[in-house]
Image (cartoon, rainbow, N blue to C red; front, side, top):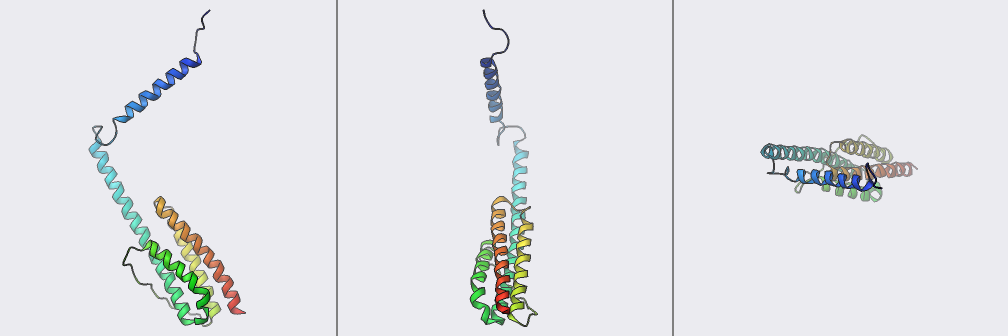
Length: 175
């Protein structure tokens, strides 16, 4: 007696035929394959240009934040030379992060003026500046393309670690 109705083999054959038909139908819709290819290529080019402008804008803003932070480090080290040993490695890391964001031949750090009269207060202000910079980099993640987002996330994490280290250094400086 022969089985009637749907068999497992029949289902697999039908599914394979449908999948093959979908794959073959999709092959002709690439660039130059369909009648809307000119419009879709122009749209893709416009989208790429827009993404490049957005990335440049995000990089410029992040680099400006890094340069301001680097200027803060330079000012504190220059004003309070006793902090140079603790701040120099962190400043060098901020310089490297900023260099990763700024194109070649970038800007010089913007020096800021701290109102702190003692080294402990200056280091606490520097810790607050690191926190603000890390928050700024995190805020930019939502708009950044994937590669830049990874870089910004890494720099923000380093900034949070720097803020912690600076807070501890400020405690030691006050003692």
